[in-house]
Image 1 (tube, helix red, strand yellow):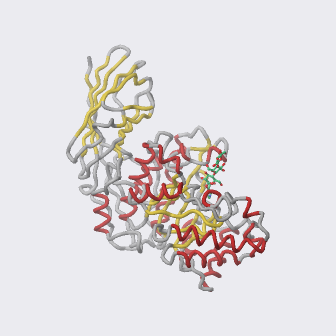
Image 2 (tube, rainbow, N blue to C red):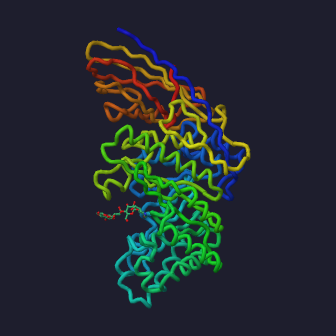
Image 3 (tube, protein in one colour):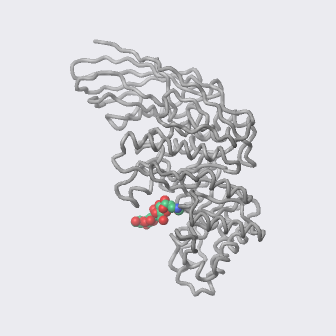
Length: 495
Ligand code: G3I
């Protein structure tokens, strides 16, 4: 029986990028490096430099949106709790959940998400207080004279409930039409455009420290809608209305990131507010072609690099952890694959491109053509984690094959300095191979791009330590070893 061993691919040099400090969010470069090297307790699933650690080392955050039901998915929570440093509740802080009838406040669902974030030392963006959508009919049916009171009471109660616990609030969401006019929702109809300032002042009174944002979609490029937001922000700032930032949702179509994104963000920061990418996704016609996945990687790198290049851009949040969690297929039939993780939470090219844009080193070349750091970036020395401070993985394996079947034994070695407390080894099986059984791991799905997950007794791999598992598979002629190994999203060397 032939026994084959794995070959080691040549490493990719670590890109160096530049970054300025970010107020309260980023710790010092030393602390960020420490975060990259030693992940806090509870960050199961982190094997090496993560989106989170790399972003924080650059002075920004990388976030994800999660819903209450996501908490039941251990694969999702392992990824979210390790790769992301900011959490936005997808629905649970909206008016229809929090105050479905007048004065009856329900914080249970959102509290559970905040607790998850706290357990994983993630910050939280509150989303959202005043929005025409997911608004109970009792509000939209109120006489105009009562809307302001209901709005103030809602804001005061909800912001007060989370006082001191959140990083930011999306105070008003999606107030503009595409032509830049105000949306004729219950709030505008009752109070005119002054409802925005009123909402911001009410939120500030309830929590003096939380960042206050306005948030909208289709304002990423320079257009009539972003002009309207720009003019509103300018007016609010000139009036002394408390406003800390503008959220750009960034629900993009593959290949259509606006070329004016950077200039647009910069004109907002010039007004004295921060900016954030708050709901990033990049939808692709299904089935997703490799060309579109490569373009998506370019798009993600573009967004990350743009945020890094704009002083005052505090972070990037993806809307949903993986493709399985995305709102896109339900809203845009025929489109999907909009996030950095596939339906099985395996990283896609957009993940690698984002890691590379953040200065992480991967040994699988990104298909993206990440733009160079902007000349306007700060010239301060890069705090990129050195290879020795990150953690990594190596996979060795041997296959024993016969005419229609094979067994494969794989050994994962933790080549870094952080203990892995739960692992998923992603890899791609050769065409025609179907896993029929496994030991020391569960493997799903049975063919193609799969994930092998630890069992209850072998989730921990100390630095320098290793663990082994294996599987039996049928094959149709190609009895080769798997390829493209990743440990909790981090590409592994082989040998
Ligand atoms: O809770 C009900 C459930 O009881 C019912 O059985 C089910 C039947 O359809 O609907 C459930 O409500 C759904 C809700 O999400 C919670 O799952 C709504 O139908 C559905 O429309 C709603 O979609 C949310 C959408 O906002 C509503 O506008 C998405 O999950 C959420 O991701 C999305 O998020 C928005 C941001 O808040 C603002 N920017 C755009 C973004 C994407 O639309």
